[in-house]
Length: 100
Length: 140
Image (cartoon, rainbow over all chains, first blue to last red; front, top):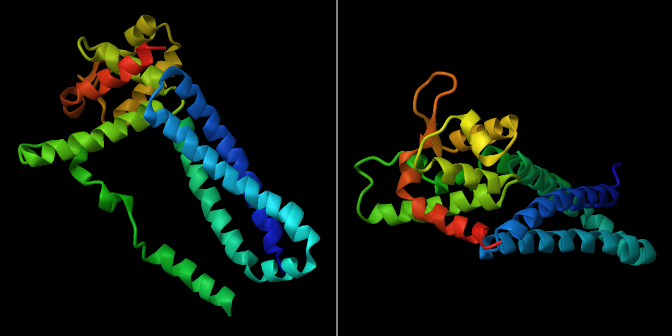
């Protein structure tokens, strides 16, 4: 049996790494081209990053500490896993487009 | 049970995409023909503006791509001359030129090696968007 919660967190970490790459490129561009477009790109990427950091924080504090919460979270963890994996695929495509 | 439903949804989403980018963006966006006149032009320009911003501001090396477009807008140059003019590595320019060609922003005047590159029709028609972006680059 796969631990979906752990897999979801690994995927969230992967998302954070992918977003760091994207944000790096976007910030470099923003320093040269100051416009609503470049700032918007950075803002969106940062918000997505906050989302993934929240997932990791949820896992490392609430989930690990609270046994009752752990049980109820495990019942739906495969949904979280699916959401994160789909996001990872999407972000991989974005990184590929951005870096090529 | 819940997992089975989820799996079914996943398979369905793969097999029958309800959402596709190709449906949103018209296929002939880059091929402006005589039929594309009047009210459709502003729609195309709006979309083109979005694409140009994405290619320049949303990718690594986008600023150099803008500079290449700006350089060849009045006088077509080959990849070698672009590299010399912009003081860039030849390989870098070759890569940028490839990406710009793939995105139908520039086109080779002739087929042979070392041919000059020039802006495509849609890029020429929307030079004001490029100027807008170049102004933003110029301020820094």
